[in-house]
Image (cartoon, rainbow, N blue to C red; front, top):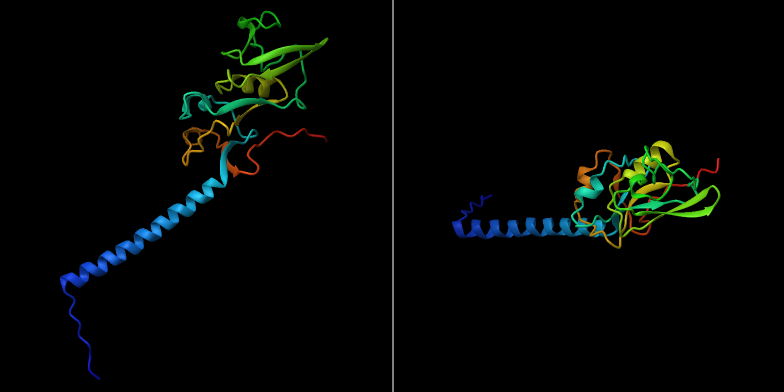
Length: 188
């Protein structure tokens, strides 16, 4: 049996190398596109049970006004006269004076319901996601105030800068058909 001895010249080597490079490039492109389609099926969101209201949502979002906003779960709220998410801990009066409010932008609106109950609503246009109200509500209240990514504002960056800076790992990807992680009322 005769052995076949093929000599490969430079032209053939270059041709085979280019073909192999193209195959590797197509494989990489396919992987990139499949990763993008998976990211398209998910959105960034904050797990309210992991969030520590560190303030990074305000300063690390790529948008000028953060896509993260405070939300209120009214079923959890006690509608208290003194709300630790609304009032400064050292408030001299339980009213809507700026010196007594915890929110630096006045994004929480206090409305009288009936003695001694008040409703607290979030004006999302004024909310800067600093987390001060969330921290106060979690420390001394019932945790009805928490932060969530508002998807009508979010760019859904592939690598969210807030998620990268989140010290508690509260930022996570969620299915786009269930975009919010809301706190639940414990009926137990």
